[in-house]
Amino acid sequence: MYDVIIIGAGASGLMAAAAAASKGARVALLEHKDDIGKKILATGNGRCNFTNTDMSVNKFHGSKALIKNGLSQFNYADTIRFFKELGIPAYDNAGYIYPNSRQAASVVAAFRMELMRLHVDVKTGISITEIKTARITAEDTNSASNPATNKKTDDRTGYCIQTDKGSFKSKRLIIACGLTASPKLGSDGSLFRQIEALGHHIQKPLPALCGFSCDGLNFKKITGVRCDATVASVIDGQMTEQNTGELQLADYGISGIPVFQISSLMSRALDKGQRVEVIIDFLPAFSDDELNGYIKDRSITTTDNRSLNEMLNGLLNNKLLLELIHKSGVSPDKKGRLLTDDDCKSLTRSIKHTAVSVKKPRGAEFAQVCAGGICTKEIDVRTLESKIHPGLYFCGELLDVDGICGGYNLQWAWTSGYIAGEMQ
View 1 (tube, rainbow, N blue to C red):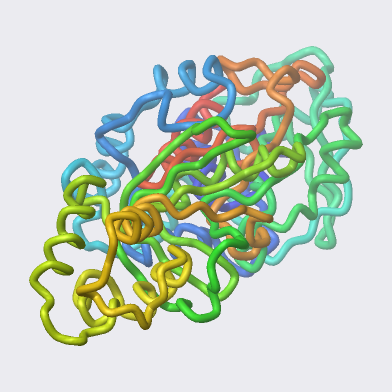
View 2: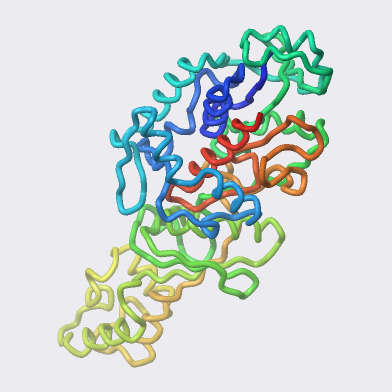
């Protein structure tokens, strides 16, 4: 008999286990993979950007009340302090916070040692077959090994977890199983049926922090090109978000950090059947007038028979430049010195305002997180407790909250895991 059972040993589940056990609860942590913290090890390219000092509600998508309440209880400063107490000093890279070792493995190791210190019963490689409510009797309660919890109480509802390694009973249950992003690392949706059997509804998981399949450029010709660019999402004709950074061009379409930062709204819009485009500025360092003037000057000073792409050599990656010249409608064979004013404007428009039609996000196996999750109306936004079943809590990605890149999704995992874990 446990005071708390936590399902899922990702970031939020590990934090929930540490928070609950530090309050004196007898805790079991159940994980269906063969080890804890697998997704943590993959974060930040193995360096684990675990929070950010520029923390605000507008860095997240989802219920503003849920996010605001969460961050007011456990914010980035609490996270930095928590890890410092575990022996993980922070390294601050312009507000992006990493472990000083720059190793995600350090974070997982710190949790492993902390859970051992707190006597958390960690069970890995365990498959859950059923979750059901169960009557917790005074005899059950008084059988717990932790003297702090050996108080005679009236019978009340708790939880029984059926697994392939037996059944486990607890007074409280925290579900931290994630959604479907990176299923090979543990979040595979295998628990959805059991959650829905408890009466909860899961908003459809949609890939976020991911690339998108697009039309509008010959992507097979420019695959592998990386360049600084500004990308802006346009949904049903209305510009919604934009971001600047290293754009990655792939045979299927677009990817990279700036695409990830605007991905959540695009995935949601596509799921609703809305028309989604991305406007790409391949030279954000130039204004339209500056680029137009540059092309004109190059044309005027080119007195030999250089072709257009030869005249503009060095402006952009050559494969990309040729594709954008083709898209502009100006013949790539045209001599640079023969460019007209209209040609210069067309080239500027192609380089600064290329529109691609967004067809679909890449699958969940390529996404870092998912949008969607437990219907927010079904939980208390302050405590994260179910409004349907007392003593049942949700945390992490399973909640309908997702953040942009930069440590925000891990911060939400720490925040929500801490809140769920400390509720006694």
